[in-house]
Amino acid sequence: MTAIADQTGTAVSAALRTIDANIAAFGERYPADTTTDDCYPPRPANTGWTTSFWPGILWAAHDLSGEEQYRKAALAHVRSFVDRVDDGIDLDTHDLGFLYTLSCVTAWRRTRDQEAKRAALAAADHLLRRVLPSAGIIQAWGDLNDPRQQGRTIVDSLMNTPLLFWASRTSGDPKYAAAARRHLAQVRDHLLRDDDTTYHTFYWDPVTGEPLRGETEQGSGDESCWARGQAWGIYGFTLNHQYTGDPTLLTAAIRCADYFLAHLPADGVAHWDLVFSTVADTVEERDSSAAAIAVDGLLELAPLVPPALGERYRDAALRILASLIDGYSTASRPDSNALLLHGVYDKPKNVGVDEGNLWGDYFYMEALARVTRPGWKHPW
Image (cartoon, one colour):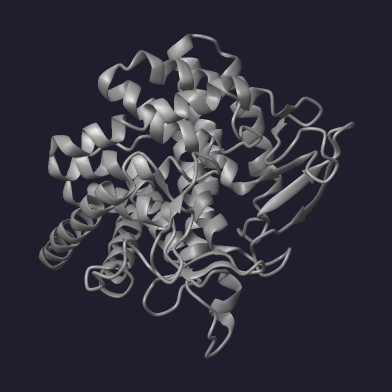
């Protein structure tokens, strides 16, 4: 434990230096989804699914340092998210859970900001509009009438349903949690395959609700195991088990975790698709963001399972985190404004390949907070 403690202390200091520089550079703007040549350009507006990871990083920096500047910087972004939901800007996505949990639910929990609360509840209302009644799933992307997107959900949705559980607890209205529970049952039953791998996306007939087929958007193939999706499974099933008490969701998280850990390269940082773990001398890129998400999921899962299994998960998480710090962080890269490099956004479309990405940076900060601040509470 001494070695990892030393590593994480140094890693936190390095991350905070980079965040300080980014606060000065970006102000109330947002970094892009991914770096270009290892540096984030500014994003022109609060659009897309990743902007909330920046205030999420700022809240984690506040937790790690206690410094007021990070709290003020995080709160400065609430207005942008209030305006986004009020003005109907880029809301055709299930990623409202990502967007409003980290930006506004966190601000409400910590400061009782009433506008943040109102915006987050409004985002939950928008998320309910994406429920396909025949199947009970939350449609992932795009206009609800788009025939290419109708009836599709994705494994990432496991991280968006916590907004609905929060909304029910906060408003007293059970409709949000009821929609989340029905959606989760469909994800569990159809996106988690018999071999413990996950589909990235899955379709239901929009009229009858009949389950149709699984596909991928960002994995190597429809039947392969996209690494980030499997990591979402570890963390997302665990979080939703905590909200529901449903033991089948805990079992799903364990299945995702065991498969993920069994398909890692020597340094513990996954290739962008786990299928490549079986390919000798593969040159396929790693996805540091999948590794960071898995670290958080494993650490959250560990105390919920029998002690021997929990110890295995915790040991694996610490090993992966140590590898991220040593081989993937920017501690020795002052020319980069990311926190982690060597991530992959979408290899099939050649987007953000072997670059830093904003969600990887956020989940890396979560991991550092988990390991260095005993009792730290996640925002989900």
